Length: 416
Ligand code: AMP
Image 1 (tube, rainbow, N blue to C red):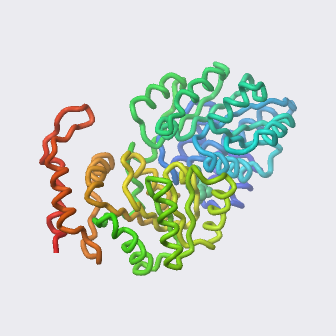
Image 2: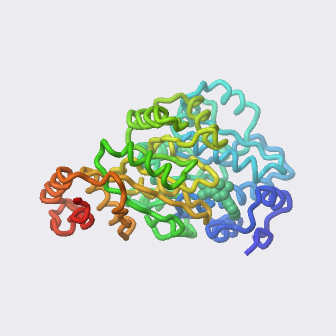
Image 3: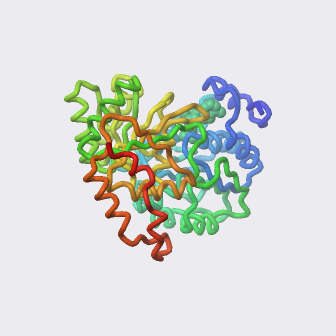
């Protein structure tokens, strides 16, 4: 299918063409016609599938056609998204696809002064992209009214839940007009998100581009078992061995992110860390330098990395494994975007074996183990990891599960 077969108006087709897109991605192919028919949509899609364009393009078209003759000054569409990075990227998409249309958009998020945002709101905005906290602040101060919203997009709903924003989201939804079009996107569908979707969508069309909680087919995944203190050396080794000149490295903690970036710098590798304690300016600067390839490595915590969109990112490292298996899916979704090939490498120490088993369960496959590397787990760690496996395990319902299921099969071969 071609974009020209999607009944898009000329100014949008031209803008899409100038982005260099050859054809719509599967989610765009399925979502755009339904949104243009004014249907509610439940989009179950992970990052990198082109989901932003899947909602931004038809929204621009609907708003443009509907308000062509009137000049109504009101916020007509709201996109709610969990992080500022993601919010900025969504605004970039509206700017790109709407560059030939007179539709105004604005992005608002916390962590920066609110006055410029208030001033911009006063001038009139058609589409507002916002993170929940700052939006609520500005609503409470009377700077934002949602009473004219015609289209509401809830992006990355599962992430809103992970980040503790779900109550804010519900409060915002409570202020929206009952008659509206709602587009709901989530990479995974935990029960609470399914419930939320059921309450805010009306007869939605469901568009599912990859099975829930699966990982993109285009991403090659591997696991390296390694002792925690050796992770630094293994990363250094692989950067050279695999000739990686551009990679994103994930870590669970802010402190860890800083330490890895510092260690890499000591080894002469240009790198920076982004996490929640860094100012918005510092984060954006690091991201820009990474995109411009002035940095070889960007180290990020999950929250900071949310929504980062980097073209041609072929490698992603999990320096440590996330304790929430869905986060693994989000992390590796940073590579292999829009059908490109990607490689995700995970370092697993003895204590993280549990997390790996949870990830296998979620993605319904076993990630291949790379045995042959210079820093294998020590016998002491292997024994410790066996101790962990011997403890009674609980399954997701809290029932004791058999230990046999949890035994880590790769470990036995690792002793040298
Ligand atoms: P998203 O899933 O919205 O984060 O998009 C992931 C990436 O895919 C972004 O860099 C988009 O610019 C890119 N993209 C979106 N739609 C297309 C398309 N039809 N063809 C090629 N790339 C696309």
